[in-house]
Image (cartoon, rainbow, N blue to C red):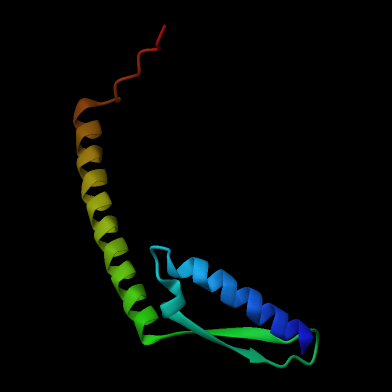
Length: 93
């Protein structure tokens, strides 16, 4: 019990630091302690609604970046196939 309390206090102190961060992960998840039959109690994390919304926005941004990279790569492949071998870099002196 003492270990759990001490961990909770240090977790609260570190959470204050994260609240000032950009990501806002403190709102994105919640946690509870779960008893363990093998070893110390464990913390179980769960996404909140805010966390699910943040995950959705991030996934949309990644999908858009993937689309942009796909366009770039297809155009680059066309350029390389039209010109044969890509130009070699000239060594700097």
